[in-house]
Length: 279
Image (cartoon, rainbow, N blue to C red; front, side, top):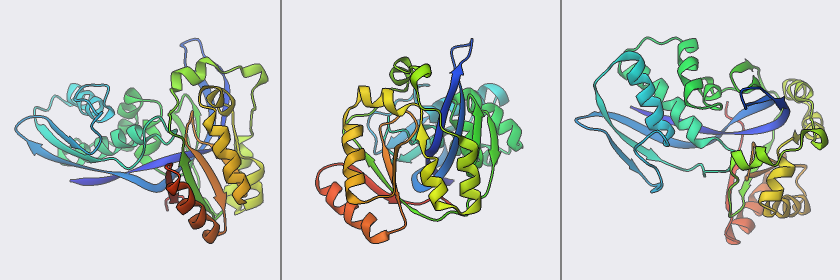
């Protein structure tokens, strides 16, 4: 069985505060993108992983393996699988490729093994894998709150192109949160972003772009700020870092601008992708 595992960006990310359990309470607007990994899972006599990403391991550091083992513990199945994973989403990029891969695995094994999990049960398993994984069970635009487990889907009417540009270095999420100063941080309004997307208000989308984690991420990878300025100089309408970084996304309704910047920046050696919000 094959499945697409889509990337995401955070059009708005507000860190409200730190909880007693060490996690942070979040208010976010997340949207899935057409950019995706492709994952195929087939029954096999033993566990095997085939991937174009050589850094992937066959233990729980790999979100796909973690998802399989959590399902195995829950349902007691003995089947093994050959997993073929073609990665197109970069790591430490704020695009949640690993989380999306895990969610796709949960959805596929639910069908392959006839586990009869409803969406709530899949979300329960997803939450155990990682904080971004529940979002990808639905893979729909949503307000995401709590530590990532409270999702409110909504429909997007705004239409625009998205250019993704990743610096040469990624950002460690743990290191980014460690540098976060909540008292002096930006706290964007995620509900106004949601309203703008629903209303098809492109200018409102631009006005409410914001990410509490951008400043600490730039301290760790200054090239994020450089790329933001490059994209502003090209003439993109809105530019922001996604998640905990390091990918920067730029918004425009001018497809020619998007294509020109993609060609130029790819020639300079950056990871660059033109994408849109997934239907």
